[in-house]
Each structure stands twice: as structure tokens, then as C-alpha cells.
Image 1 (cartoon, one colour):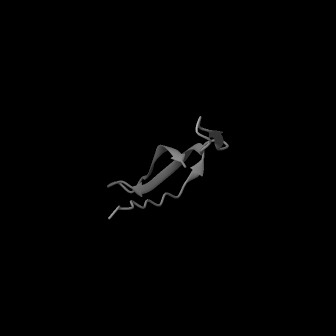
Image 2 (tube, one colour):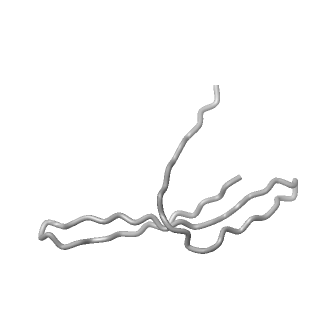
Image 3 (cartoon, rainbow, N blue to C red):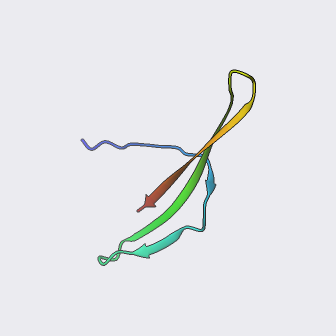
Length: 58
């Protein structure tokens, strides 16, 4: 039985998605998503880290 991996990301688009068609006619869309994480360090200072995720959707 095939398995399905599910992922949920909440973030902001880096630029407009770009859609193209493969040589066999299948549509694929590429986009980048900025996913930020905010926390306070031991001294109480606010910190933020942003990861960029490149996504390919079929």
C-alpha cells in the first residue's frame, strides 16, 4: 500500500508562484515560502529565525 507524507507550512510567499508544463504536458508550480520562528532567549530578548523553503507542487 502506498504511503502519503503530509506537511503543513505557514509562512509568506517570497515571490509569485511560477507554473510550467513538462515535456509530457504535466503542470508543475514552483514557489518559495519564508517560515519564521520567534522566541525569547535566556535573557528575555526577542529572537527570530527565518527558513526559506523551496516548493515544487505537481
